[in-house]
Image (cartoon, helix red, strand yellow):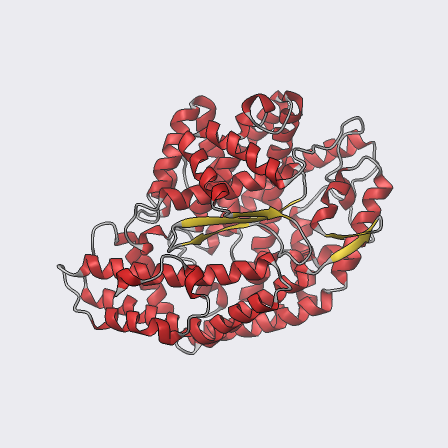
Length: 566
């Protein structure tokens, strides 16, 4: 019966639990021993992959058009009618596997995750988790509908990004203030959603018997190899080492802009005689040149990207009612990744497509693993796959190499990228520190005014070098605009840790690009079959939080910036 399952979830978008139930019932009843475990896991993988892909496709449809009422209906119907039943059925199979005492080859690390998931399971949480996903969709709708009038055109917030790079300061400021005004108009709506999120998350944690939502998410995210104290260590290292480096970048910008103080609308401005980088005119050019660069990194990796283009697995352009941000998700049954982003013709978009391509390559490299549990990669390494690709592809940015820029423009793009890495770490620390406070001070954090105050406190600690005088409201409500805080709680330090790993992979590539790419691919091919530190080690890096590792990374970035003329 499992071999007759559809190959893709496109064929089952309206399936109900009655369509699915018999597969889970058969797996739950089938005898499980050393002789049957392999086929049992394969069949669990077939139905699990199809259900995972169904959830992904329904979610993707809501982000591609947040105003699509039919897509919203289907997704909500799935969350209400199918998702809780699937969660319960998956728990039954996890328990069956654990009670068997069997440990097939290659499943030791995945079993650690399965035990953690099984321990968190609570029937009372099924409806709460479904409601949480509905609230995430509501947040997307609020943000996706934000547009402003600019020169007689209705533009999305993302489409204003190129304006911030213009030389004319009053124009930059006017655009920035219009965007801020539009975002503030949704302040009450997002605050209302926040109260609902916090109520749900408190109850979800309480239902599992854990002391707070942070403890719940630590287990849910499978953070076996580090703890909250390591996060605080990382934050302190960023404050001591990276914040001064970021201040040096801001000061350099202030000086070459000839300003007495750097304001929020100045941070993306280019030097007076320099035109902003405009790497592509449309998404076809973005796709074509990205594929060319990726072919130079590794022909097989470039081939993966070509498959995605050919099979229409890319949605790259920005438009009204499109969800915010960018992501790479997986259509598990079809064994294909899907990339979503909001391209508007700026240099950041080039980094984004390379970043999401790294995630996609991890999907392709892990296809050979027989069981879906082996393909679940810790996000702290999944982001190494993406961030390392941004750096591994950087030698091929010039048009001579099939990329986007002249040699001078490529140097500028690389300088901007490395400065972006330095500037990102303090922001990451703000988001991480804020979330630690939120979920260990749940009652206080349910009041958005207290969140505003805490965000401002962390902002002033880490984000030094920009003058926000008179803009305190816009600064203190920044947590409202970081979608991870609302939709993916506690998912952000992964970016900071992975960036440190990616720089180590890049450092190896500066000595031997081919060997660094080879080790990178070996690590991707492991999926989730080894522990997080071992994934880093295979890729040629060390999983770390300490001052020395961060100092070495910042030194390399600053030295390279200087060599490139920055």
